[in-house]
Length: 212
Image (tube, rainbow, N blue to C red; front, side, top):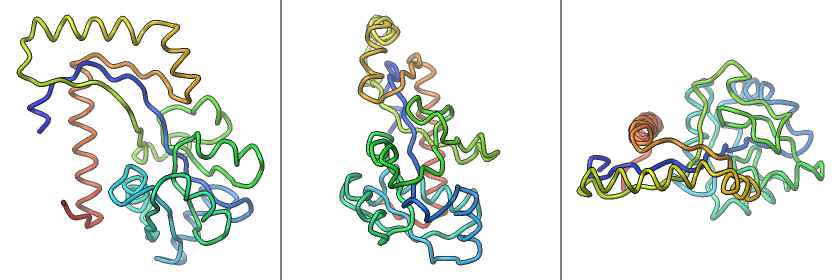
């Protein structure tokens, strides 16, 4: 339970990218148009059942009122060959998996899910750019600790992480690994985690995804 945890800090955020084989869709709007015309005909790949990319795909179904069919894969790297081979219509994966193929001209990045455009994908629209900010979906990494830790000790830990995560050299190192610095304080991270969990639960429940 989130009540058993206290946020130390959120460290980084990164989007998911919706992509297709070059020539399959011109843009995200053409994907939505075909999906509305042919319910359940278009397939989307994720890197696993109940993964962030699976839930992202279900969120797209709900926000755009379409019905794409989910096809899970065992890891992101297996999505791209399936899309390039024409076995799957659309893939949903992290930017590092997509960028090399995008530069090679073999795929089209239709949209990215972050609040802001990822630095290496400056020409790929976010869902906010497409006037559908409810489809915004960010993966993230952060730090948490037991809520039983005394508040004075927690404050010391939070302060140390804030100093480190705001350090320009640390931020540059994170960016080199393809991650976007996204610091949030412990208090703000707690609120973010609660809101994110509620969104995931709503999406999963509406999609009929069962708990383990």
